[in-house]
Image (cartoon, rainbow, N blue to C red; front, top):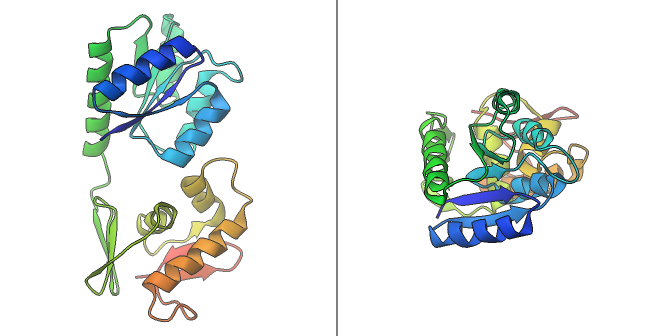
Length: 225
């Protein structure tokens, strides 16, 4: 079931979209302001975001810029603003589509499906990363050790995925925190220590002397081939 985060400060519209999208087979999260939207995007990792520009705490373009700082999730702007310069600004900031209010529900659903299809098609081509005894399947979000599947929590997987997408290269502490937990968490270094220890217990032969999940003191982490 694909997931969508709907960001709008109109309670009636949020309710209507939630009902119609769920009826069409979507998993729906909602947010009524920009701060809640950024938190929800980091926590739930939706497949696509529907974003209103007129929010009570910040402009929707600020939310868009915040999302683009750490994720490539498709964003469809859903706004009453019809001026050309508003559309150009949103698209320049990284929006994937722009729908003006009022809109037809069937058209919106088609645009949502198209955005998700494009994102899947444009996903990085290297879907399988093999590092020593580890086989990391980025497409299926699975990891096996010596041919046996290892169960990871969603956060453990997100941490491993960041390193796997940069295999052999140092990933800074700030980048890991931003990509796994979202913007605003760049100083929560204790998260990294806890989850790296858990990954090593599950994936390393000798967690006390890791061969592949390597820490560069004070700098970051890397997945060593």
